[in-house]
Image (cartoon, rainbow, N blue to C red; front, side, top):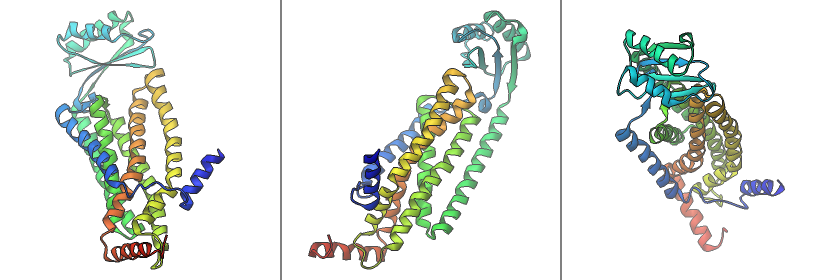
Length: 329
């Protein structure tokens, strides 16, 4: 514990430092590859949208036994609507949730009887519901509006708070990076995209922005303290700020990931609760991506955006000359 505290203290004082800003090309390349994969895969593979977005019929079989079999549900569905492969989830460990395309009233009644017979339960234990695709479309539109409103407000807030649009731009790029990667994970792994997952997408924006603001606040503090006689270049001051907040970012991420991972495990394996799994999965991937983007994308990008400013260029040259002459170490 003492050694970890010393490690954090060394990072804060500058006695130990990771050259994160100086190696930004590596971090940008990693981020670019992840973003590219997250964009290309959905184009060719598409997303696995849930019934809330596509519309369809959903059946829930209560008391279907411990760990109900998917094969049983598939056979029952195909006996009524041949060729249809239903989506299947287990809820609560003993309930089977079967989702199909939109069925007619007669098909719904017949499938209800077939599922009851297949799982050996009374017909009263099988409930059915219809979900229209227009409801999912409305949710999508509202989510897009919420996302746009959030981004606009975030840009305005950060521009006013930090008094520079370049910090706002770097933060927004990091936010978009997180959103694209989380969406890409859903596409690559074929996870179902539900309204709960969309809520998770929007929730990670707040976490990512909070982490970025903390790091940027330290960057502003360091760079404001640097005067004409500063022994550090602008990029070095940014790098120092990242190192000073590195342990805090890691600790915050670990503390946030542990309960989310627990919810993800409990929701998906023990309870079979789809809502918990959908939200926690988006949060888990988003927190990991947000931690990376704050440290390795947002801060280095901000340094890059400001390096060519005349005053910063002069300061870098002055510091370099002083080091060459031996006046500064």
